[in-house]
Image 1 (cartoon, rainbow, N blue to C red):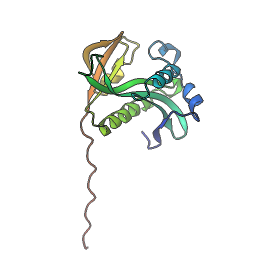
Image 2: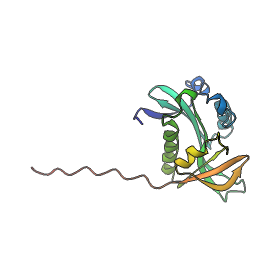
Image 3: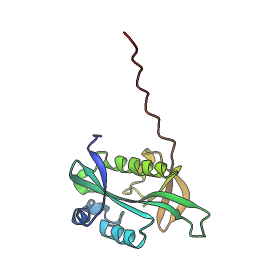
Image 4: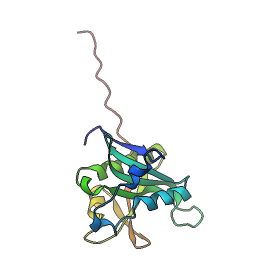
Length: 169
């Protein structure tokens, strides 16, 4: 993975770029299109965090995270943050962009004080379950609609190694 990977907020200036992100046709039934994500972000402005995934200046995907939602809808007994949507462009898959996206969301959740990352996926052979399990997600036994719920427990990011002290030679 190169240091040219970054996230960029979706704005009026890059909206068409975001809308142009499409997964492979055989995956379209597994993840909603970017346009639905942006509509959801519009009606959930304090919760949704839509971002383009860029490699340099080249758009390679889209993600939408969520922060501090009442996951069970029961008045706040189970507040969660996580990955709401992940769309890696059809021609860009298998290059580590999905892993980068999950790591970027994990970093943002940690920054906000969270200790777990929740996501959902469609079960089945053609679904992304193996991808999420390889990253350390574990099924919770819950479902959200027809999707399986998984969690990744976040540890604190490692502290950078201190610079060696250089004394007189």
